[in-house]
Amino acid sequence: MTGTTRSSGDLDDRRKRLLFRCWRRGIREMDLILGRFADAEIANLSDDELGTLERLLDAPDPDLYAAMTGDTAVPPEYASALFDRIKAFRAVDQDV
Image (cartoon, rainbow, N blue to C red; front, side, top):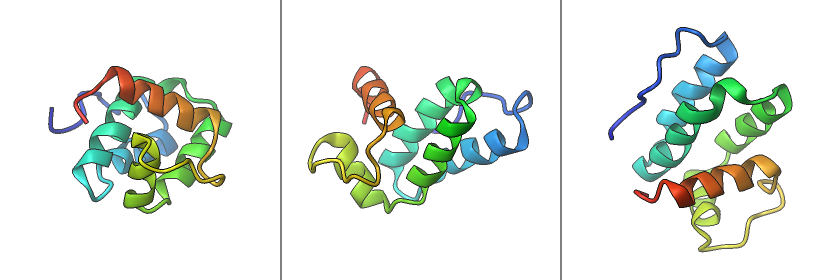
């Protein structure tokens, strides 16, 4: 899979922007992790979760990827229930 499989037509503008950003991180591994999660979950995230996702998207790719893969401990600024959901989603979707 090389990109989103989800239509953004039914999403509000905030979710459309986040979906786009999740698929255009800068390094392909993070595109796949965050993009696939967003494809599956973006429509169901609460406003608080959207805010958390926005903050995660501001994190540098190498730091976020290392935390997501377990190569480093999760920095406190990234630690959240949403981070844990993304990490668990990645574990099930083990292409990355």
